[in-house]
Length: 89
Image: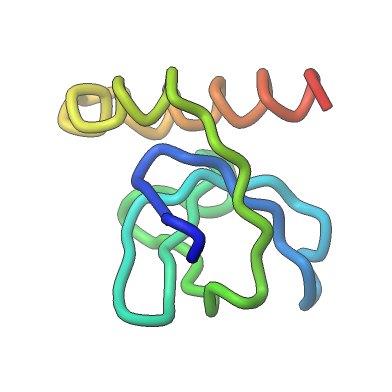
């Protein structure tokens, strides 16, 4: 079974945002909350079913997630992490 952890990245597999990279910021039963720091922020995460996203592990961001999202510049940090990850694809 796939483990969806906060701070990991996820790519949307379907919908109007297909192919867009997000960071997982919340998890509930069969749903995840996704942010990209630009269109979707921590205040308004995109909710998607787990089966509609492809998760990408990122131990570096997962370790920093809690402390960085508690800071004032959390959306900026998420935006930079997502842009950095998408450039590396």
